[in-house]
Length: 137
Image: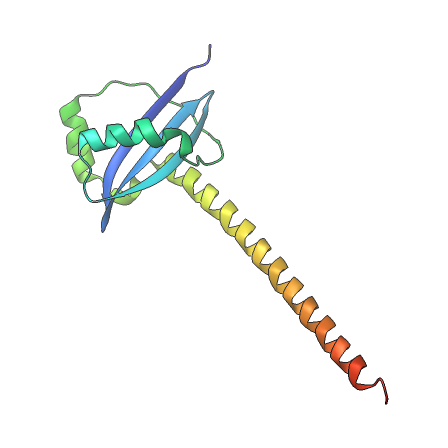
């Protein structure tokens, strides 16, 4: 049986409000990050999920174990207040980091190729100009 669990965590990532979508499926986690800007209301978040969920770019899957444990909501609230914000959803953050690194390498490869093509065009143009000068009259 395939078990799929999805969650959305909205938090304040100075200076904007951000949300992390996490999807656990078959022992792997994928995540997507969204910047909301101003503090979103519940209705705005719900509307965003309905309209834009399928447009989100999720990270590649990261293998993880999903622990199911029920804790007291008041304890969760206390722990959330004590925990530093940079540790929210560490597996999600790893997945987002992996996605960011992959897009960064793809961008750098495209940029390097574009520079090489420009360099080759300039070289051919210089060669053409040199040949035109040495034609003789």
